Image: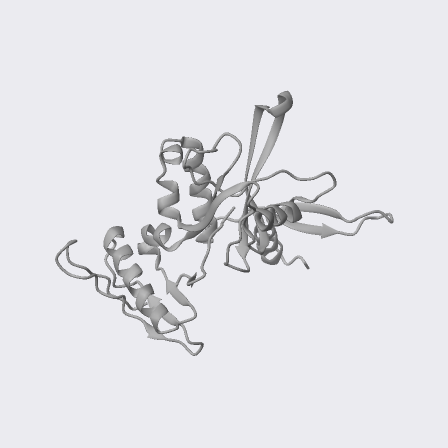
Length: 253
């Protein structure tokens, strides 16, 4: 999944006042920001209004200006009191498929696919994203596991929603399977009727947002050498909580 893109919005750090007049009266004001040492901009949102529409308007106008100036990245610091703005800062990688149930529907969805025999989860999800969109990514964690029945071939199915970190951003679609692909604001993606009216997807998106905000940690892959000469074993578990517990109890890790 994730795919939480920060091609321009690489993290979330401003002492900015976000304000704009009602639509049609004035151009949106730019976010207050300062330059960093790496040709980027640093934005803090402590003093900004919490109105999402006004914030998005100012953010878009600011990005246009910073891009004109050749800025390489934007770091936005979001205080806890302004976490309602987080969905407006996130972009996800989405596709429209040429085949399957979504063909011709206009629905944007996450890149998906099947593991091939003998393939590890963390490798398979990276491969599928690369094949469909040309985007290189790093596996971070399994965020959600969905178990459902009556899948193809009368089988039950385990569907894993994974969090990836993008390593590239230029899209090149797999033309045989994918109609279109793009980076889309998460808020716009989640507002599609298919997702907006589904309690299932609402819960999945809540988990993904929590992961982005570092309030939730899914299952990371840990590769462990086998006792025999066979291949390594891969475990998936919450590494962060385990390490925190061990450290608090004086356990060497």
